Amino acid sequence: MKIKNYKELAKIAGCGVGTISRYFSGGSISDDMRERINAILQQNDFLFKKNQVQTNVTLLIFDKTSKWTCQIIQFLANKLANENIMINIVLINEDENLFDLKLQALQQQWNMKIIIFTSYYEEVSKLLKKYENNINVLLFGQQNNKFQALYFNFEKIMYQLVTKIASQTKAILYLSLGTEWKTLYRGYFKASNDLNLLTNYLVLTGDDYETDVTLLTNTIIDKHIETVICVDEESYFLVKSIKKLDCKIINVIFEPNLVTNYLISNQAIKINFNWIIEQIMIFLNSRTISDEQQEIPVEIIG
Image 1 (tube, helix red, strand yellow):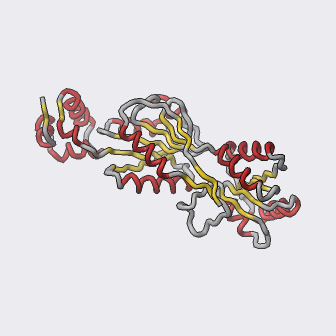
Image 2 (cartoon, rainbow, N blue to C red; image 1 turned 45 degrees about the horizontal axis):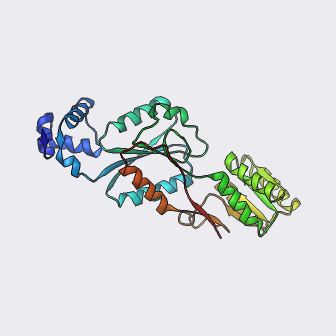
Image 3 (cartoon, rainbow, N blue to C red; image 1 turned 90 degrees about the vertical axis):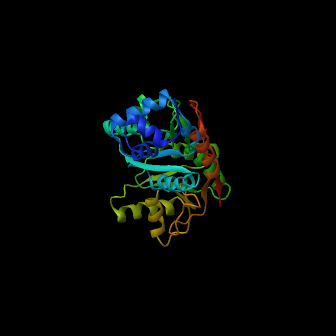
């Protein structure tokens, strides 16, 4: 049977046109009605669906996601909104039952694509286990060979950053205020080793400002530090608060278009957003399963 429009589909399903509209837009309808409409669409030729160009996209964001990642999400959401794409943003945590409920509900919606944003420190493999090899899921932020994924190679980024800095100075301090970013540190350590630089690594607790200031000041003075690489906002503000220090400050995680006025760095990472949008559009239009792992291109500038 050929179904030409919402009205005909609503008549067959035994519901109103508004229910059909909510079905296609990802709105709220009963599970029974959703299953009934699904069955009708599978058994019949819905002509309107063939001409429907709008795609529904849900950005699934963990509540621990870094501010930096959230800024990227905001940028991408604005871009996608200009491409005739309906955007849903859903905040979740690592509760397995809640995660399953959210993802299962989303997968029942017609023409729904899901982009799961993860931070570097989140272990999400267990949560994603039952959804592997899913044509409608893209992982953003981590490598996972069971999903199509876009990711930042933070080890490589740090290696390139240190290499660029080392052409101007040899005394570099890696500074963190409680952030355990192992991939960044591996890049820093490897670059320092390859370039025969002394590794200066300082992780502060952030529990006591005066203690942190004293430790940081003494380290910079005693080791004649000329450049400080800050891997989080907190460490950046700590360095900036010490007025008498004369050293360059590098924010490893900030892209010029995302940086607000109070975050100023001598160098930054320029993210190729056009490439990201291009890959996401390919994913949205794809009808084949992919496990391609793509490294997001970046450029060290400044």
